Image (tube, rainbow, N blue to C red; front, top):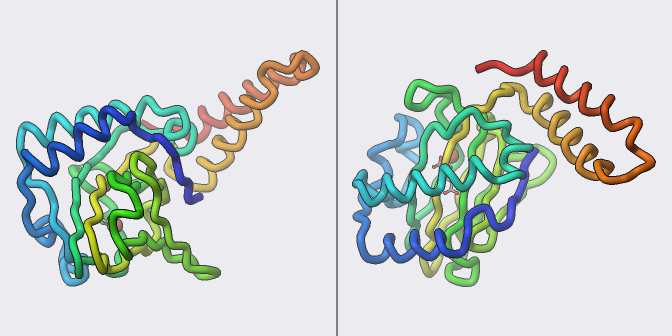
Length: 220
Ligand SMILES: O=C(O)CCC(=O)C(=O)O
Ligand SMILES: [Fe+2]
């Protein structure tokens, strides 16, 4: 499941990140943190490690882990890694798969949190490989695209302006994307009937099914 999530972080946090990116943070060649294959197709710049960057990442992690849709779709155990990237004119990231393990943890979901508006740059679409159709995504500032880490994906060349994003990886309590989708659908069903008096009898059974599926599938 590929899921766009609007308003993933607050406008205040978004504003703080963009102004720090312009004024305070330093950026270096993104190839330094890529594996041997990704290095050949990666052409961007990313924020270097610093206390200011860590403070940003802490706030972003907190906001995303508290977000209802992120919780429902990803069932996150924790955020494994975050990168703040900037793509200027001529930069892109060719087709690749993300590393299965980062910082000692399995990566189950990947996401891109868009930090500036689509009108601020040409190109720069995130494309998730899909045998049936190419799906380009270019979301508004503060929105994120959440997708399974087992996909091939790429970022089209930016032809003008600048693209600023935070890219991240989530270790889920539910390893299998299909099982996560069943739980996501159940969450939505429960939310839709929760306050309907005519569903009062069915609700406990649905809650029981969700709990018991979690017990079957969850790992820590
Ligand atoms: O910039 C993006 O939207 C995605 C970047 C990416 O795929 C990666 O860093 O692995
Ligand atoms: Fe990637």
